[in-house]
Length: 279
Ligand code: ADP
Ligand code: MG
Image (tube, rainbow, N blue to C red):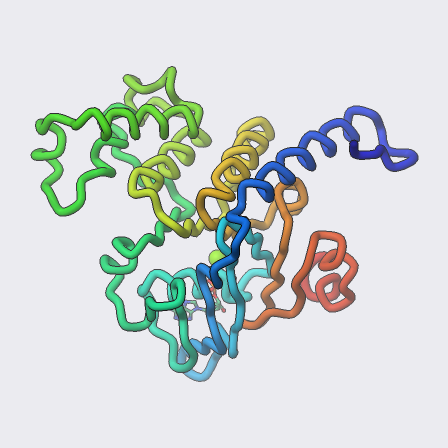
């Protein structure tokens, strides 16, 4: 049982307890034997002219972990995701996906195939197609857009689409045009499209920007439900949101890690308060 801190209003306390239960469930789903790290970044440096967007950045992600990354604008969060996905090459350092995959030797397409999916800030769903068809297209592989839409799905593929529809809470909207969805629903659909490839690691950059409070809460539940089965890195500015889902938080500033730990630890870190939270 979780306890209510003295002085905390009851509704706030029950929300907090509900989140704690979900977090614990995500932790329980993690593989019991940790066979190394899913992602290991070591002393990554990325220079633009003489400015270092990443400055000897070292961090790791464990199997099934939901890692939250926070930090002020310009801290290097997006650049870090660009390096992981092969969009930007670092000047120095290394980036390993599991024990054997050196990300710095792979192209962007090869990195997706290896099992890393990235959700950008702006949803990029096909607005003129249905929710179902969007998920169908995400199966595409190297087949063409039109081929995929006219080809017959296998029963396993149908089942996977149904499963993803329920994970992203859009089963009732399966036949709706994606263009008719709310902003939040489009974001979930895009996460669903990534899930069609069953990635081992998901990168999510500012998922709740522009969402209503209800959509934000639902997104937190969605990300927590993915943890355990997938490893997830979430970058977000909304501190209430981070507080609701966070287990381990990494704080970036000027291209490096300045603090790491649970929410309480980083919130009480003087340097974090100075450069980010106190601003
Ligand atoms: P964050 O996502 O934490 O806000 P970014 O990774 O987007 O930070 O940016 C880190 C720094 O690198 C910023 O100062 C940004 O202006 C700079 N930067 C990012 N991409 C480029 C680029 N392509 N050319 C020059 N500077 C860049
Ligand atoms: Mg950014």
